[in-house]
Length: 140
Length: 107
Image (cartoon, rainbow over all chains, first blue to last red; front, side):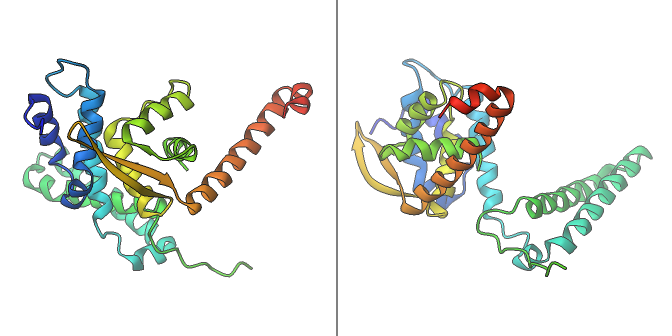
């Protein structure tokens, strides 16, 4: 194995961000591609390459999450406005609290909550391929 | 279909390829406009495999590095053909409107 060059160790550290199942399946191949693309003597991952690995790792992890649940996908038409309103409301609330100097720990609760709502709204607009199809209304 | 996905499927339409091969091929197909990065490529490959548009053909080890070859499935061929036809018809409409006289004679 050539598994001990400093560059490869650093790439491995970045790949540790991926979900376990994905790593088991693809880590060796991704490393081959990364190492094949690296010019002789390169010591550390390039910025663009690292940013892309981190971004993809986050995407892979989000793809595995089970929110929104399938019920919500089927009732996307009803739930999308709800999620958007709640999300925007939470953002607004956060802004107001910070504006009055009461942010502090509330931010730690409100910001993730708002992010979750808006993420779900985004997923309802652009569902992943395996999501259940929305219920179709009869057209008049 | 996103452009990266379209280009990956197009690369595999010419025969099975491994990851690095796909990256160079996509670069060539897109006339050096699109250079896929490793993270993006494997996120896409993982998804395409889940959707059964591509499949693993074989694996080999070269210089103690794993190479996995991917190929298009019949379903993948179908999807790519549909998408190519759609893009082709859109492009033709655009060209026709921009230059009607040339649009008629081009294939």
